[in-house]
Length: 62
Image (cartoon, rainbow, N blue to C red; front, top):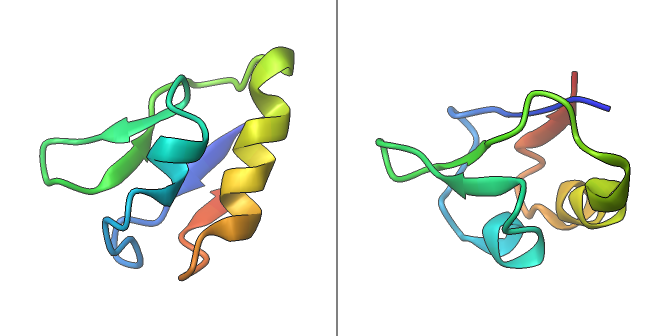
């Protein structure tokens, strides 16, 4: 599974970083970004939770 964060939609709320810190982190612009090209199986549940909980739907499946 691959995810992306739409940088134009991200409001830097931090929910995804808090929910799945092994996958999401802050980029140089202060917005959340996906730090893994391919989401490992053991991180897929928290990654999907972050996708579903994003208040502005900035996280999308690639």
